[in-house]
Image 1 (cartoon, rainbow over the protein chains, first blue to last red):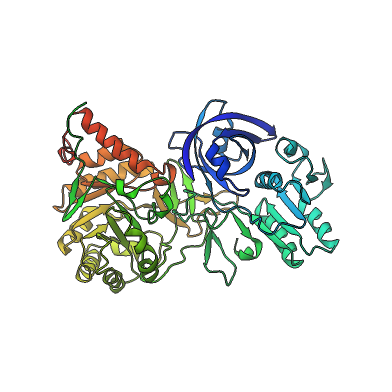
Image 2: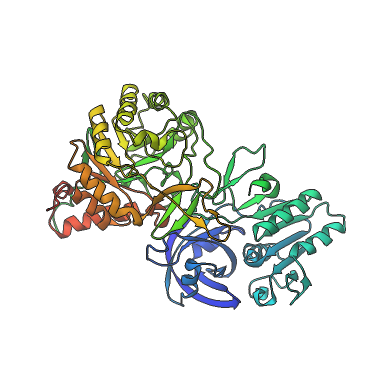
Length: 262
Length: 307
């Protein structure tokens, strides 16, 4: 993990309110695992004060790494204005990424909205294996152009709330019909997205006794396990009452979290 | 440039610090978390996370929210507890070659004494900072630091059980911080440190609920710096013991304001989250400030405010 001022290589809008930023650091690229994140200071000013956490969404080659982000507030609005050559302070890579130790079988990636970001890095890493990427957006205008990052061989399914592209309904419909299909002994599910979606994914996979890892998001001040601000309640029987998203996560086994308390 | 580099050493009572820059409790962990970024041996010292007799899981989330030029936190003094601290953290702290201050907290006056007693003979701990100012725990915490008599009783109890210098960390959430500082001094404290966070809240206007799980939290960051500075100024003029100042310090200029006001050392807190190497940058900045002005010792700056 390092902190460094690095130049923005590019920063472009790729969908409604969604931007893709390219940054260069050989060390961050070589140390990064899918699911890990970086903390970015969007300006030198003290307002907004804190760094923002972003999943690494890909390492397409060389020393380039990618950040996919949605403009949701002041910090990301400032970030969206960054131009090629601007310098940003980046701290990372941080946290524990996806556990890939047993991904021999089929992998289902389930992403909601900007939650596709860490899964894009994962898809790239497990390219060539049996992977289906289920993505959900509110509307076609939010659809992230996967081909810019993802492996070409990955099967991509789309669901939108308004039906403007793909299945009409939540992305969890796609997961549900897959799981209802049966025979998923060595299936692994990897999910990231809004909390209600993740809660549904966790319930479905636990119900079908399918292994599921979720990438979680919370407000975060330091990203280093020091401020203890990013606490999430663990399920009964875990070694700690609260996990820290920055240090114990951001990726967790779905059954290790207390979904009623999140 | 020739000549000796400026001397940044300062004394806090019986303690000698390499420089006046400490990291504040709860913002630097045990130094482990910053291991890749900051060598603690470069620092004046570190104040480790508030320690209680038994482990505390902390408050329900959300625990933090950003505010203009600052943040609110309601962590609730989550910590490993005395036993795990001695077993797991002390061996690490022994490798640091820096001054180690342990911030302690109790649910009762006796419990403060028990934590202090538990640190007896632990050589790596150079001093104890008594937290009578945490706004985020219901049973005690700030309640001890808002009354001069109770402040004095907690301080006496810790001193009775402690074999190290004792700092008392003061709350700004009081009518008259000077009376609390004087009570700590009269009870025998070796130094006071100030300020802890200011109590505040934030509301989610969509859901119409408090943003923090604890409803209220402690405000920190540059937003509180002028308040902290004025309190340090007032306390310096009212007590004879050393004052350790802090509150929203982001760079060496901010640190200098506190030193000029009379703080003998400063604590860097929330800035560690934003700029993990800020403490080292402040030390470099102080050195350069002195060198550029021909100041041989940082002592020549402390308490030199012209009014």
